[in-house]
Length: 258
Image (cartoon, rainbow, N blue to C red; front, side, top):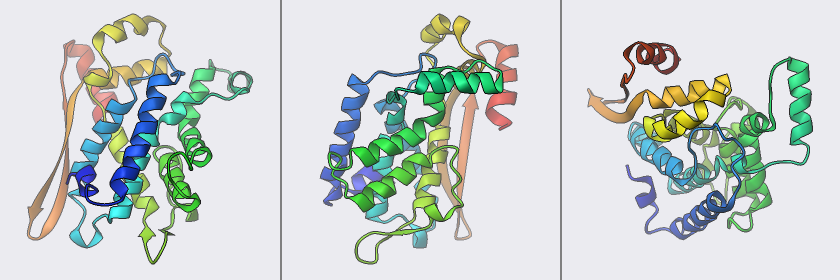
């Protein structure tokens, strides 16, 4: 399913264009706060949408996404990582406190990375008017953005939200779809070898693992098969091994095992 095309002849199309433009402006002008993070931005958002197009094909027809749900999901895709561009005045002090308490290196950049889903939600709330979202809609998008990582989705917050006249938005399902598709955007294209060679010597261990996981992944594909009236969603992950021994280890421990 082409999710963006599904909104083509609806009022949601122009509204999504506004959100997409705001996101693009932020990535062009904003300061990215983590040197060693894999590549984010509009290309990542487009890749996530491509994966979502495949995933939603596997949803049973009687549970298919409504036009409003598609809009809130796509809006969240374009906004879910903008928190990577937001720093707080006390970030440095908070990072030092965490480092001292946990007795391990922990930087301001680490804090921003760990909290970026919540900061994306903050951005949606604070800029709802510019995003052309009313308070209820911005609350819905906020939850989906925050739910793309770490946050527990089995709480009351993620129960269905009624917007307007009997329009129930399944925020739990939308957040889960975003989380899954975001995790599936893994490939060498998000970890260019030339850039990795420049950064790897000084990378923290966690960032190095993330780069290696991406670097050794050739690509990810999502497809749907039907058998006896049942739909089955297949996720295919292909890896490659520029360095056979190291590549096999990365594939076994970081890509397929989780």
